[in-house]
Length: 248
Image (cartoon, rainbow, N blue to C red):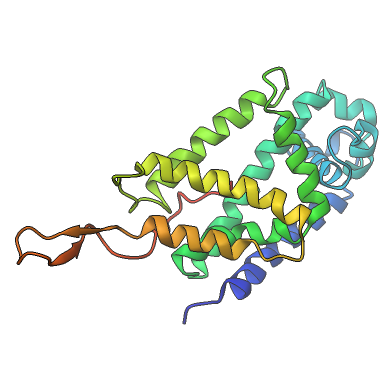
């Protein structure tokens, strides 16, 4: 039985939310008894929570250290600068989102609704969404410490879309397959701002419609048949869903 997007998103979000809550509130033993990789991961999780709650500019290293239950000095032994910690937090957030996307796909959500299901949790927390979006916008400045991270991330997303959710998208007279990927990425960025400005208006269903439109092959003339016979190129309908889908 195919799960509805809301059911699948709720099922997938539960372990994700629980994991984040446990990580943000974890209070392990101090000192050398905690393994360095585990302590580093604990600090990164605390940074994700602090940035989500306060934004990057207002998230202090002391707040992050308190959330991770380490001293300020211990934090600095793992991360010499706040910029270094930001990059680690962004990478962790991407990893969490990829795992979340995998859970969504295992719930057998219809292909055109996978992206909207992955994004639903983000859209339901506008304050946190605003804080993460502020980092993305600031990083458009080539001097920003996360600029290269976001440039590389965008290229990875383009590759994932080409091999995953838009694998069936073909060039047409008006748009190339790469143009269609650009449209999806641009729409996701725009919907984030739209949702923050007008939270009463449903936005994610628009993404589902776009996915159906650009993943469905366009009609073509079947020259092997009689004149006027219309066929379709490729496999009609839904986008492919596999483990190459990531949350943008």
